[in-house]
Length: 218
Ligand SMILES: [Zn+2]
Image (tube, rainbow, N blue to C red):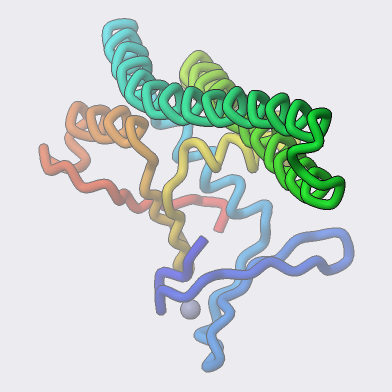
């Protein structure tokens, strides 16, 4: 969230049950917005997403392909961690043997044992995280794609937490000025918006990621 007047970040504050956003520059450029107005502008922008079945299918394919690259990276990382985990396990066995045969001292055994065990726990939590990241991203992106057609209604009905989730996936940057906002969409959603603009002649074939949305609520 940025101020379109000066480019500075916009911060939120609560006042009597309402959330207000204002420009946080030291020279106070005067930018000031009610949360409801921002939500209404985003709703307006979302109503302009229209996707044909054909477009929907090509986006699904693109999403799956880009996810495949990501999945490959994650897979390599998973294998590396799993390999290290297995290696550490065999070292632990070796350590037990050495201690049983009294090759190493009790102190050395404890020191090594604790260090390796700690690393094993770290590896396990890293593995969990890696698995989760991949699943969450893909699932949420596909859900959003499914909902794109009715995105505006979805946004209006959503609670704050759901809106944050939608915004995080769709919006790269949102700039506000006095009467409108400009939204830069995340890929590949920018394509949907642009294509629609080209079709309706708004941007005359130029593929600008920003589009100013003038909202009557302001
Ligand atoms: Zn400002």
